Length: 189
Image (tube, rainbow, N blue to C red; front, top):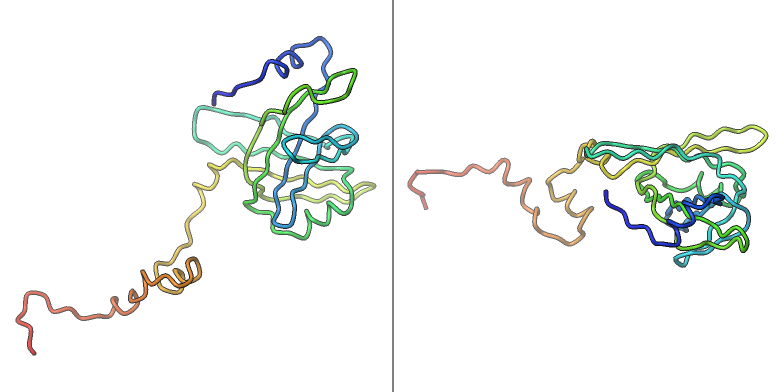
C-alpha cells in the first residue's frame, strides 16, 4: 500500500538520533483507550494518549501484496487500573484498533508532526498475565480476516426484524416454503 509521509516526520526518522513514540488506539463503546510508549500525555488529532513509559511490545508489522491475514500482537503493561477495567469488562472482538508511529523533537519533547498509521485492524483475543504487574497481550487482525468468517445470516422475517426493525421485505418467506403453486394447470374457481 502506498503511504505518504510528511517532510518533518521523514526528517525525524532519518536523523542521527531519533526519539520514536508508538501510539495505540483501542475503540470501545464507552470510550477509546489510548496509550503511547513515552511518559506523560500527548494529544494529536483531538485524542489524548496516556504515557505508559513502555508499551510492553508491538509485533513487527508485515504487509504483502496478497490479500492475506497479517495479525499483530500488542502487549500492554504498566497501564492504569481504571483503563484495565475497560479492557476487561467491555466487548472487544471486532472493535477497531490502530497503531501509530510518531517522532518527538529531542529538545522540546513535542511531536514533530502527526504520527503515521502503522497498522489498522480489529481487536481479536487478549491474553492476560498476572504477575508483579498486569500484562495484556491483544491480537489485532487486519480487515481481511473477516473474509474467513462465515456469515451467520438467516433469510427469514425474524432475522430481518432483528437487523432492520419494521422492514417487511421478508415477511412472507416462511409461508412461501410450504405453499402449493399450481403451474401449467387450469385454475379452478
